Image 1 (cartoon, rainbow, N blue to C red):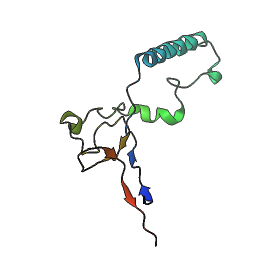
Image 2 (cartoon, rainbow, N blue to C red):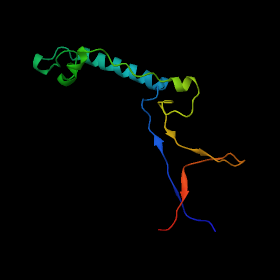
Image 3 (cartoon, rainbow, N blue to C red):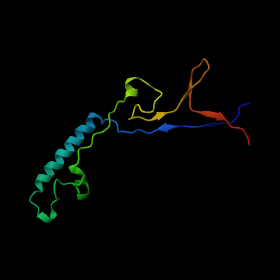
Image 4 (cartoon, one colour):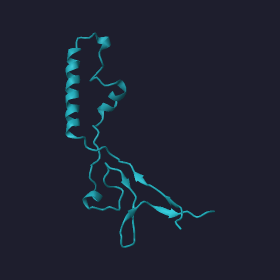
Length: 118
């Protein structure tokens, strides 16, 4: 008879965002150009209606004086050495914990144990 098994799915979420595809980068560039063009059309507004500074809100303007944000590198030492036992690899992808079957089949499965009553 087959028993009842309890399984577990362990997943590590990505730490960094993937590099956007070319079309998305092109859209961002176009969108920024469009905003710049629109800002030029509205430059003759009265001073009370204009944004202060570079157009950012006052909350974010205090942080603009600091160094620009540098994202972490996409590849790590574990990626370069092809070490699959570390979590510090493939930072832009989900990682799942899998076990390899010790039998000759060598299949992969998620962690599971038989459930015993009591």
